[in-house]
Amino acid sequence: MRLRWLAIAATAATLAAGMLPGAAGAQPAPSAGMEHLSSEERAIVQRNFEHWQRLTEQERQRALERYRYWRSLSPEERHVARENFHRFRQLPPPERQRLLEELQRWAELPPARRQELQEAYDRFQRLPLERRSRILQHWQQFQQLDPAERERIVRNWERWRNMTPAERAEARERIRQYREHRLRDR
Image (tube, rainbow, N blue to C red):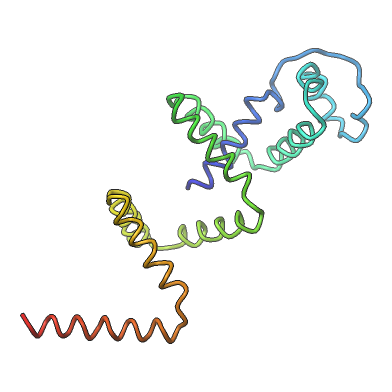
């Protein structure tokens, strides 16, 4: 869900920048650099010409990419994006700032890492609802731990991830034996 929010926030940023249909602006004649735009894109640039002129070439390219992405959305997806943008605007400023910072961190990730995270999110979404709820409950419990305990758990997890399958099997067996021994001693 967080990744979807980030995508919606990117769309919201485009809306806020005034580069989507409906934004007002000056009505100048076409200028150099607009010949590669479609007629629809040129019309939008002309409606927002003062803003367009203030953008760097890189910002213009980004605005075009966002606009083209917006146009590729289905009407339902656009409706959801508008609703999310409205909800975003209703958030307290600190929460909006936090979301924008998360969006910035997401944008700065290498594409391979973004893809990895998106795939993990997609896998999570495919889990049965009960399993997802349990995972979220455990995550919330983890977040409630004091920092030293969280760090200990993270170190153990990293150590587990670095084990070979044989080492993991051996560790599982030791844990199983330890639990059996504890149960017998009770």
